[in-house]
Every structure is written in structure tokens, then in C-alpha cells.
Image (tube, rainbow, N blue to C red; front, side, top):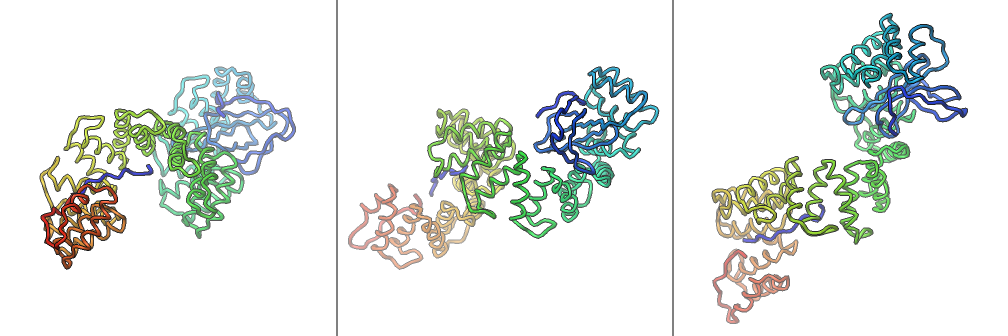
Length: 538
């Protein structure tokens, strides 16, 4: 029975929470994050943050503090503080002055006094200082406590910050319904990032009933105001036709706007569109350029796709070393597909010295994350004893995992294990089941193997006609084993009229592809038309 293996071919950080900056030019830059677009004029601007998402925008506040937090997968936070020339007396004013002088302990004390007197801006500021551990120990629970007080006073910056904490479960028990509630409160006041995040919740059906039309409505305004995260998600909705009529041109427009702000997910999506020719003329060089921009920002999917382009030849032929670099970067981030691809490079010595031990290491990491192809290659390693001690039972375990996840090569291998009783009890019916799964996906080896079982009546009733039908499907993909098996059917007159000439023709085709069994059969083929005892399998 055929056991041919065809490997898969494709495989600005802002330190301090209220960092002080001075703007000495007239209009420096406009940021949109509140009710209106803010132009930075000459004067003092106070803002803060942690590492932020590309293209993030700052919150305009005309009174005291404005705390902005922006989501990026896992919670990423920025706090924004602006003093817009309004005079504040007493403790709050003292707190601002102390903070500007980077005297965080006295700033914290002054803000606390003002907060306890009911000053909502001070309550929001105090929440921010607790969150970042400035002037006090970091305390997310106390941060949530003061954000809540400010939020209940209608502070949209605190409402947004509190929503983020509920969404991430920081300082409070995770509660997506409460997150949606506070996002909505801030969104109703025109907070662009709250509108964005609420729109995302509606897209995902988290904390609210999924409603793509509402997501479109919520994302449109911040997208128009320049929020890259909103632009990216709105583009996704247009691309998929969710909540709006599918429109690839609109999707491209919004992806480009977000990508021009450095939004890595948008750059990655543009790379996909150019690679697939979706809405644009297919252009792998442009795809690679967009993937590279996203990859250089650490986008693991883009790193993997860029590596894959370098491996697929064409315009990128001879760049296996570049493929290795990008697969390694993505693999180091835990991206399972890249871990599998990196394993393949090590296994075959492409772009790196061959090292089967490292290949197995990366296959195992990918398989443990549930990556089907990684599981298949790990199974192959166990079956062949390459990089690990041969273990048929472990091979079956990983073949089965990959097979159940639709990998046709693994379905075929699992069928062979059941056929030969390797690592499992011999079971022809189960072999038929898995061969059929792969055969229906067009996998030629399984089409041939299914033909063999039908010809022999193993696991199914003997049926030469069906056997020949499966052989022909595999022959359409030029599989030499199937050519040989069909020749054998003609030689023995099984399911077809006995015909030595046709047998010779199919044996020759298989022999031309280097199949030893076909070469031997040609040598033994009698000229007088008598049959020979030829096994159906190779």
C-alpha cells in the first residue's frame, strides 16, 4: 500500500502617568479623542501613559484631568492629562503644581484631599496615580474605587478607564456587562475611544448581544475622526459584509487610513488583500511591503506571512535566510503556525543548518498549542524516529489530533496506521473512514489507498469498479502508485476487460516516474498475454 509522504509546501513609550511636556510651537498636532478635535496650541499640556497602540489618539479635556485608556487585545493603557488654562484653587491646583514638578508624593496627597471633598477631576487623577503607582504603591482596586467615584460624577475619562478595568478584570472582577455600561456612558458624551471599544464589544458579542449594525454605527464616527483602531475594525466589517453591505473598496479605504497611522493590524490586512488579490490587483511585492511594516512592529501574523512569502520562491526565491528570521521572530512570540514553519526549516536545513532536534522542539511547541500541521509533523517524527525515539502510539496520538482537525496528510497516515496495526489494533473499517476523509479533500495518496481497500474488500465490500474509480482520481493527480495499480487491474482483468497493452501503458507511466514496482512488472510482463501474480499494492 502506498506510503508516499508529500510534505506541506507552505508551510512611543510614555514613562510616568502624568508626564509633563511643553509645546513651544503654535499648532503642533491635532488629536481626536473627545467631543471635538483638539489642536495643541502653545502652552502646557499634561499627559501620561504606558506603551500605546499605534495611531492612538489623546483625550481632550477642557477641565483638569482626562484619563484615556485604549484597548489592544490584552489591556493596554494610556492616561491623558491636560490643563487647559482654567484656574483651579486649593488642593487640586496644588496637586497639579506638585505633579508638574514631579513631586508625586505631595501631588498624590493634594489630589487625595481634593478627591475626598468631591472634586471629580481629582478623583480621576487619584485613580490614575493608584493605577500607575505614582506617589503611592500600585493598587488597581483603589484605582477602580476612585475611577468609579469620578465616573458617577459624569467624568467620561473615568468612565472609560473604569470600563477598561471591568473588561480586563483589573482591580475588579471581570464584568463585560459593566464594561459595556461604562463604555456606553462615555460614548454618549462623545468619547471616541469608548465608542470604538463599545463597537468592538458589539462585534464580538461580549457583554452585549452581538449586533454588527450597531458596531458599524459606533465605529463610524471615531473612524472619521482618525481613530486607527476604529478604522481597522470598520474595515473588517466592510470586508466581511457584517452589519453593512460588503464593500472591498470601502474596506481598502479604511485599512489604508489606519495603516498610514502605523496601525499594524491594518497593515497586515492590506498585505493579505494584495497577496490574495482581493479588491486590488494581486501583487506579492506590495503584500510583502505591507507585511514588513506590520512585522517590524511585532505583528506575529505578519512576520509569519512574510516568512512564508520568502519561502515560496517567485519574486523572493533564494531568501530562505530571511524566511528563517521572520519565522523565528513570530515563533518566539508563541505564534504556533510560525513554530511549525520554523520546524520545517530546521528539518530540511533551509536558511539554517539542519537540526532535527530543533525541528522536533518547534513541532512540539506548535502541537501543544493545537496547531494541526505542527501535530502532523510531530507525529511524523515519532513514526520515523527522527529527533525522538520511535513511538507508534505517540505517532497515532498526534496523527489523530491533526486528522480530526482536517489535515489530509494526517488522515492518510492514520488510515495507514489502522491498516497495518501500528500503534493501534488493526482495523480496516477505521482505515477506510480516514482514507475517505482525505480522499474527499482530493488527497491523491488516500484516493489510491481507498482504491486498494475496495479492490481487496478490506473494511468494505470488494468492488473493483469503485477501486478503479478511486485509482483514476489519483491518476488525475499523476500519482505513480495509482497508475501501477490500474495497470494491475488491466493485467488481471479485475473490473475491466483484461488488456496487456493497457497494463503495459500504465506500468510505463508509473515507471517513468521512478516507481520500482512498475519497472519490475514491465520486465516480467509476458508477451503472450498471460497474466502474472502481481500484488495490488506498492
